[in-house]
Image (cartoon, rainbow, N blue to C red; front, side, top):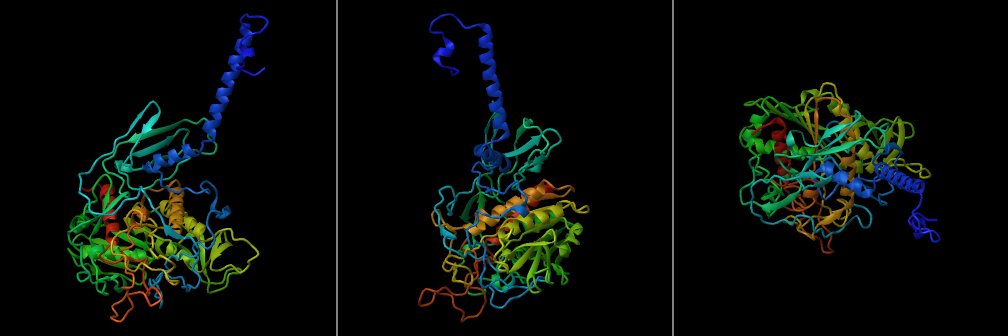
Length: 565
């Protein structure tokens, strides 16, 4: 007889109530079923509950963070099945010797890093994104503060809401935004494996003074840029777009507007006062150099710094406030060697994914703020070493009969976790580390050396015009994952923040030098007779230009962290 059928409720031959013992048994069985079902739901949350957890942690109700299938597994055992064939490959790109000094390569559009390639069909395609900001003039508005409420176990939130997730039984407690500020992504804290399945979890909504800086719109600002190409003597020629003959200038005037607050225009004097006696270091590749030069150009407008650099470290010193701006070259951020290693010959860069780059780690305790970035060198020829074993490679894998355990995309994620963990556990480092997320390139129709182009882009992409770059998306995803993993391992008094510029700068295809890479008056700037594009740089950023926004974001993050007015 089935529970709940007519026969279970009323006897056909004897229209009398069932015995009390039978009713007790039935009710007890139902209660047991409900308890077991509740335990299963708590122990094995579905996809929707996981998505809600991401929303809580990121303060973004769109849930835009791509958390791939390997989250929670060891990187070294993960083979990226979700990466289409050909992603991240850079066939034909020259190999560069690893070095702490920035190399120069003839023929390369970037003076030292190979721009991300977009090889393989379908890597880029037009994508209409109704939720993406459509650039255009917008009215300035006063800063607004998001509201949130928690009642009856239901949470209402908007994109500016920040959350703290607390776990009992001595598990992790992570503040998504210390001092009440939403500055970036935080780790997805999970309870220890030994915790009981019915462990109590508490979600606490926290009001905030600021807002999410990384979702908003680009708007045209009539005000002059923060500097000109003629007012900054340290500007690298390849990023001097006006000096190289670029005819349009509107790309200099588009500014970023977060959805629920204003991003203040950079105030050079206030920055120097706030950083008085401190050192800010940019660590990474030539895109990091691009950002460092932008900051120096901005600050130069109020004070000419003294060059106190060396071969290992560029250093600009502002004597009025004893502020130092430093840059250290680090291609991969992890240890890199060139010597032969097992069956990887000399001449192939060996990337030790589980060891930090000591070339800059030795200086780390001297820095108060570190802006760190990487990713594009993972398109270069290299062999990946993990636990003293060769586990993969990029443009190099001699034994085609064996499948690589780690490709260049997985390697990038591992490297991010490695270096950020090393920083977060360094016993003598107490500074603020800002991780600038993966900088998108805009080579459409191919890579930099296979006909890719950004020629003719003179304003930000609008809604429906965005060209999706799947390589950028998955590299960003791996970087966020590495950041999250490292954050929960932090043991020192330092702070770790993610400055997530990837989505916003996906719209700025107009901000690259394109064919205006040098001052040669005879250079090709237009397509050839068969439509072939001229040689161009669609990875680095014109100066002045969009890259200056990165430093406005850095300033705002520092201002919030250091308590400046």
